[in-house]
Image (cartoon, rainbow, N blue to C red; front, side, top):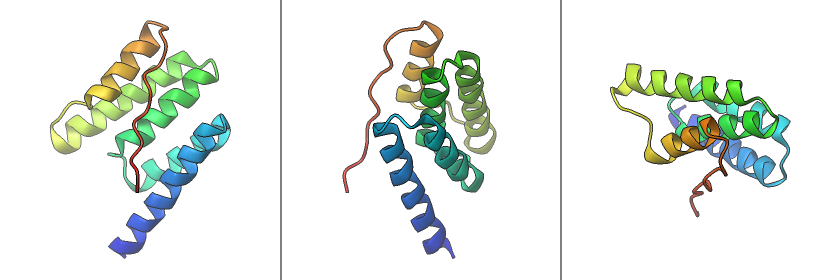
Length: 106
């Protein structure tokens, strides 16, 4: 089960990345929410949602998503979001250019 759950998350992540490249923010939202429903500690999915909300003009929703990410990580692991997630949050709050997402190469 664990193997198939991880495969599902990998496929959803790839679909999310593809939708983001195509600037299809509705699909980004759908795939990122599906990822977080399985594993709410996936920061990249939180960042995808933050970017999608911000790109759709929903700055407050993007900030709320950061706070949800922050709360999940603190509650479950006792850690703060990664530097990349923090930088994205700061850029959204200040209406600056968003930092590039780091994608892993397989």
